[in-house]
Image (cartoon, rainbow, N blue to C red; front, side, top):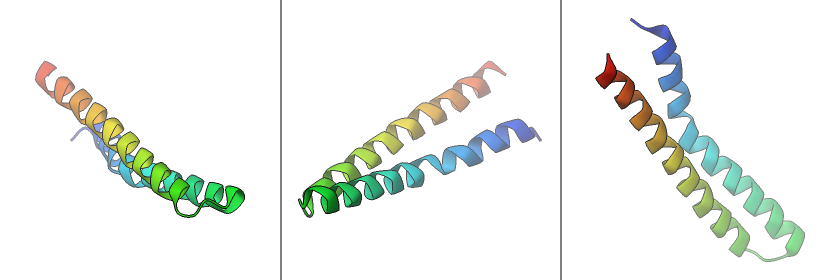
Length: 70
């Protein structure tokens, strides 16, 4: 069992939730600062979801490419 690959895959599993959490936090903070409820929260949450999905897809394709090369 390749523990380096396992560690990389476990960090890959945390990319999507952490990106969403960062978007939620930034949106909430900007809403409080600019008094624009709920617009910044919605925008930054969607940006966090998009960013997380892009990172997840890139990471999965990287590991698929490494599996094909082996």
